[in-house]
Every structure is written in C-alpha cells, then in structure tokens.
Image 1 (cartoon, one colour):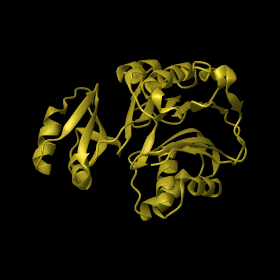
Image 2 (cartoon, helix red, strand yellow):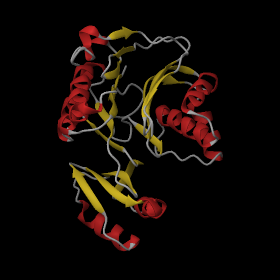
Image 3 (spheres, rainbow, N blue to C red):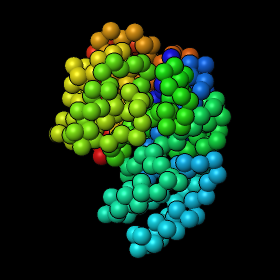
Length: 299
C-alpha cells in the first residue's frame, strides 16, 4: 500500500504556493506509506543548463569536492544548490553526458534525476519528516508529484523510494505491483535502457521512456503500457509541461481527481485533496479504468 499525489497548476500565479500545497497533500498520505517518501517539482529552467539532482551515497555529505572536481573535469564552474543530502547541479546542456559519466564512475554520489525543469528529492523515514528535511513547503513551481511508500516487497532504502526518473524531465510514481517487471527489465536493457534498482516502478518508468524515444506521445506510451505491463497499478507521470494519470483495466487501487479553474489534483484518497483551496467547488471524480488522463501547457 502506497500513497501518491500530484498537483498541476493551471493558474501560474499560484507557483509560489505549489510546494506548500504538495507538502500538505503528502502529509495526509503518511499512513498509506510511513516508511519513505519522495517528490518531484517542476520549476523554471535555467537557459542552456540541465538540472541534475544527485544524492549522497553515504551518511555524511559535502558537495564541495563533487562540485570542484566536476567543474575541473568540465572546464567551468558548476552552479549548485544543496538540500540536506541532495544537491541540484546546473550542468551545461552540452556537458550532461560527461557529467553523468564522471558522477557514475565514483561511489560517493548517485544521480536521482535530471531535466531542464525537474528536481527530485527522496528519503527514508516519515513522509512528513522527508518533506520537512527538503523544505518542500518553500519550493515553487508549475506542477509536482509525490509518493509515500510502504515497503512490502523490498528493503526500506532511498533507492527504493519513488519517484523514478529514466529520462530528462520524466518521472513516475506508482501504487500497485507489476508481475512481469523482471522480463520487461531484461528486454529494455537490450534496447539500451539503464536501471539503478530492482524496483518494478523503475521498470515502468523505463518502459515509458523507451516508448517516448521510439516516437510515441506520452498518451500513446501510457496506452501501450496497458498491453505490455501485467499487474495492477495506478501511475502518475510527470513531464516538463504536465502530468498524466493511468489506472490499469481492473483499477483496484484507489484514485481520485479534482479540477478547478486554478488546478488539477490527484490523490490516492480524497482526504488528501481537502487541504487544497477551492476544493469545495471542484469537479471531483474517480478516474476510469484503462483511460489516460493528461494535462499539459504549451512548451
């Protein structure tokens, strides 16, 4: 059992409030997943730069050496922001592959995700504590998704926490379980996809990334997943410009959507939506099985 939330702002004047509302929604979902939590926030881009979120692989952390050594390797200083164990690096777009290779060659830092807009943070412990550790309530942005985890099939680790990102500005949170993820992982590896964990949700994220790389739209990739992924699931997927929701054909995992003139919101349970302003007049409904819902703004 896990809890997932998502918030997409139609009214961009609310961007300063995104983190506060997302944090409140995530906190309500604590009892659905008390072991760990994570979230992705999409905010303004830095022209010519890619945001690469990395986390310390050890208990102690200091980004100073990483930033210094990476800057020396790339031939220019690397701007960054520290977030209590996670660091967001601003990498020149032309140097992303070199930066990734340099970080992956070491053992002190792990790449969590990258994109022009996306930043990802996750950790173990109470979802409320994880949210407070990264000061989610103070973050601004256009949209975000979050996940609280109850680890029923694997160890409680940061690597086991959602969201999972397998492509630029792409991430996924998942409530459910896939039965064919091991076979699908092997097939995707042969197609060039890379995975950091044994988690089935990372396979789902990698599957969508592969479909998109083959020219599919996100809606087409989600529709194809209904045929290629076995199991039961609710997905919330983030992209640079929006987010999508999909439930499997049986739809046994709880899900609810709400829409107003100002926002679209998703949660595993309605009570997580009650913290949002104007929810009393929102259009609220349960998403249909095997139906793709997607909201997007012009790039």
